[in-house]
Structures are given as C-alpha cells and as structure tokens.
Length: 273
Image (cartoon, rainbow, N blue to C red; front, side, top):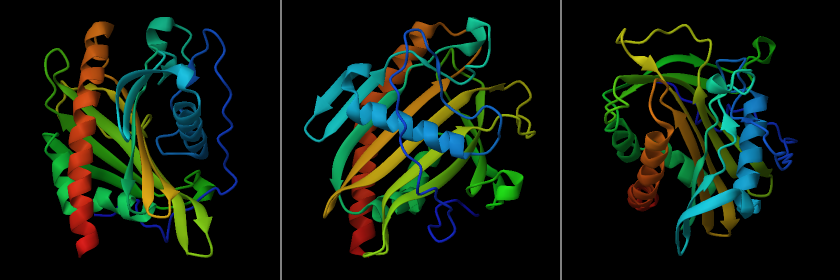
C-alpha cells in the first residue's frame, strides 16, 4: 500500500509562513479548504496558523492538563468545517484539542514511527474498518500539490455517536530543510475530511462524520523533538454539543498519555534496530 510519508517524493512549499492573525470577535476560522477533496496549499497554511496559535498565543487556549513536558489544551469554539455556510446551524463552530510534548530523537525518526507496525496496529485497533481508497501522486496541473492518501474508516464509537464513518485525505509535508545535514527540521501531517469525493459509505445507514488532525514534529534541540497534535471532529446528527465536547476533552487527556507511551516504546524499538 502506498502512503505519503516518502520524504524523497513530497513537494514542500519552503516559503510557506505561519501568517497568523488573531481572530476578530465573532469570526469563524476555517479548518480546511472546503473546495478540494485533497490536501492543498490552503490546508497547509491553515495548519501552520493553528500551530502558531497553539504555541505562541496561550491566551486563546484553555489548559486541560499540564505536566512536565506535556500539555493538553482546548481552543475557543471558533473553528468550522463549513465556515462559508450562512446558516449558523450548518457552520457548527468547533473547538480544537491540542496536545504537545518534548521527546528525544529527530523529526525524521518520529514521523517514520507513524508507519511502523507497532503504531499502525495500535491505530487500527480503534477502527472496525480502515483501508485506503485512493492514492494521488503530485500533479500540480490537476491541483494536487502533495501526495494524498484517501482513507475510509469506521469507528465503534459509544452512543449516541454510533454508526459513523469517515473519509479523509492525508499527506505529510516536510519543511525547514537543512542542507548541511540533509535533514528536514519539521514534518507536518494533515488529515482532513475528503469533501466532494465520490466514495460511498460501506454501510448505507452510516453517517459521514468529519474528523481532522494536524500532527507536527519539529526539531527542538540537537537531540530532541517537539510533537504537537491538533484535532477536532463533528459527529453530525442530533448530538447535544455538551456530550460531544465532554467526549473529546476527556478522551484527549487519556489518549495523550497512551499515545505518548506507545510512540515512546516504538521509538526505542525503532532506534535500536
């Protein structure tokens, strides 16, 4: 199965900057490029803006958990999967859950962990079905600026979020290339809902929900890396907002510790080979 982690084939926009501008009162901020089923330069820019907000504008985030070397926080409810919708009930503003920490290693080592058997198996355990639907190589004339994997997922979520499936587009973008070492100082993984893609639900009764993740590993020192994961979702349907909020926040605090433990264990196995 092809995936988008190959650093030799990934196109990077080296002049892409965070471009962060603090949101205005009442402003809805887009989470993604609504017009494309694939990850685009606009998605890349939005991911960098979100990353900048999390790292450099703590007043925009509420701390949920703060341990030495680990932070879990939630943003204001100002982000939207569909900010172009005029009807507020359709724009459905969301908050972002952010987690970050410092670990030993290099950005390349940590992004490669996403494709080790140990981490892939751990991820797959959370889904009843998960498979690749399509792979797109770079073709800028067709508006495809990065390799894109389209992935279908079904998750056994608790009531009332049952019977949900997801169709997402995923890519990894290398950044901050250092010619003296031949290494990238940062990798940005973006996974977003693949709007306008024609792949139907496997179960006809399933509700096509939204889920987006921005995962960034960046060189922190000579032998350390800062990892940051920014995530939100919209289960759609008539689920009370408080239930969704409680689910995401409580899950984030637990999953941060579990994910860090799994990745740290995988890293130790990886570097010993």
